[in-house]
Length: 88
Image 1 (tube, rainbow, N blue to C red):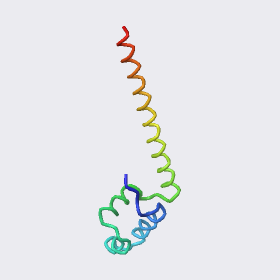
Image 2 (cartoon, helix red, strand yellow):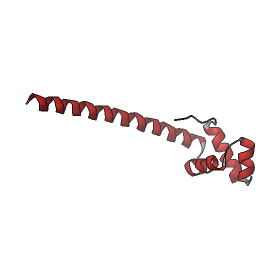
Image 3 (tube, rainbow, N blue to C red):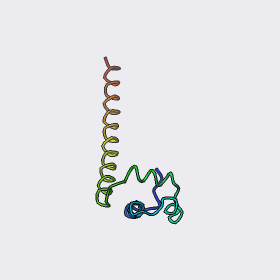
Image 4 (cartoon, rainbow, N blue to C red):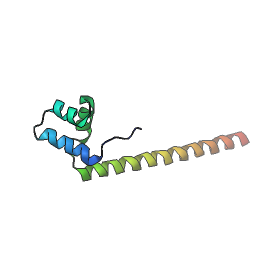
């Protein structure tokens, strides 16, 4: 996945500017982002502060790691089942 050019605190700052009344097209132009990017940020991070955003990213990373571990465990279990089936 492509990493963002913007840090969590920068994204929150842009969203706070929009909440403060700055027009969205002007914000997008000054920060060099598209309206679609801004809308995606707003839907994903709207109402959060930096600490909540950091915690969410940590949980996403942990979830990704656990899914990988589960997949590896399932793969090894399937391999064992297949080898046992071949023996009998």
